[in-house]
Image (cartoon, rainbow, N blue to C red):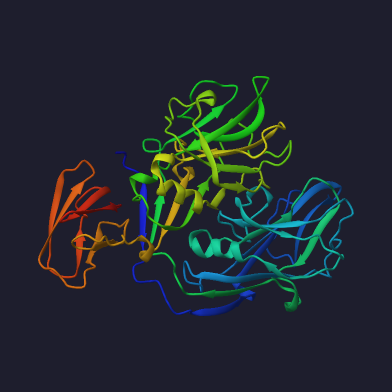
Length: 486
C-alpha cells in the first residue's frame, strides 16, 4: 500500500449542543486596503478611494483593482458563519469619475485573496493570487453614486474562518476588464468621512461540526494523476501540469482533460459519513501552456467520478476510464489567468467514492463545453517541483457520524474517532458490561499486530508505534475497520 502524504487534525470534545451566537462589526484599524493600477507602478495603500476600473490615465489605458483585508482573529477557527455582509460606499470626493458604464456593463466581482500582501507594498505587478471559489457579484449600479451596504459575502468569510492561514481578504474588480470607460468608485478605510469607510458585519456561532479533518496531498511518489489529450496519444502520467482545454496542438485542434485519484479507500473506511470534502487545485506558473484562458469563451469546469480502475502511466485519450455524472460538480469560469481553485465543495462526490470504492477511482476534470477553441485551465500536478502546488483534498468527519454502528451479535462495540491519529477508543454498547474482553488487532494483510484486554466499558487503544494504514479490530466474532493516520 502506498504511504500517502497526510495530515490529521482532531477536535475531540469540541462539538457544542448549545448555540453560542455572536455578532461583530469590523471597521477602522481592523481593516487594511489598497488600490492598484496597471499604469501606476507605486504602492497606493493610503488613498481615500478604492477603484475598480478600465480607464485612461495620463493618456495611457489602464486597469484598476482594489484589495481589502479584515482582521477575523476574534472569530474561532471553524466557527459557523451565519451571515456576513460587506458594506461599500460611493466616494463623492474622488477625482475619478463615479460609477460609470460609459463603455459598457460595470458589474463588479469580489474574490478571496490567498497570498499574503501589504498595503504599503502591493502594486499591480506584485498583486496576490486569488481563488475563484464562491465569488460574489457586485450588481451593476443603477446610478453613479450608488452605495452597497449589504453585499452577501457569507460563503467567502466562512472559507476564511475555516482556513485562518489564508485570511487575506478580498480583491474587488470589474467582472469584465476588456472594454474602456467603466468603473466602480468606493471610499477606502483612509477616507476623511468615517461614515463612508468599508465595514464587515458578521454573525457566527461557536459550534464546531468537525472533530477530524484529513488533509491528503500526495507527491510524485504517492500521487496518481494524469493529463490526456486528443492530439497526443501517448500516456502522460509524469507531467507536472494538469490541463483542461480546447486549443491547437502542433497545428491541430485538440481537447485536454485530467484525472486525479486521491485513493480515499486507503485512509477512510468504506461507509464513513463525511460532513464536507474540499478539493484544492493550484495554478501552474511554469507551464508551457498559456495559463487559465477565456479567449474563446468561458472555461467553466465539470468534475465527474471515475468508475473504473486506471493507470496513470497507461491512460490516454482513447483509453480513458468510464465516468459517472451522478453528484458531478460544476466550477465557475476563471476571472484571472493565474487563480488557484481552492476549497471546491465536492462533498457528495467524495461521499459516493467512499461509499462504493469499487465504483470510485478518483475524478475526471474537463471543460463543460469542449467545442470552441482557445479556452483552458492549467494546474500543477503531484509531479510538480513545487510541493506547495500539489493537488490536495480535505475531508471533514464528525465524531457521531464516524462511530461504527453496533452489531447485534455478541458484544456490540464502536470505534471512535475513525480515522484517528493512532489513539482511539473502543466502547462496549451492551447494557451489561462483560469484562475482561479479549481484543485482537490485525493489519491489512491479516497479520496479528496487537492484543488489548478490555476491562472497562470504554478503553483507549494506542497504535502510535504502528505505521499509518487500515487495521481490523476483532472482538469475538465481530470485526470492524479502523484507519490510523500519523
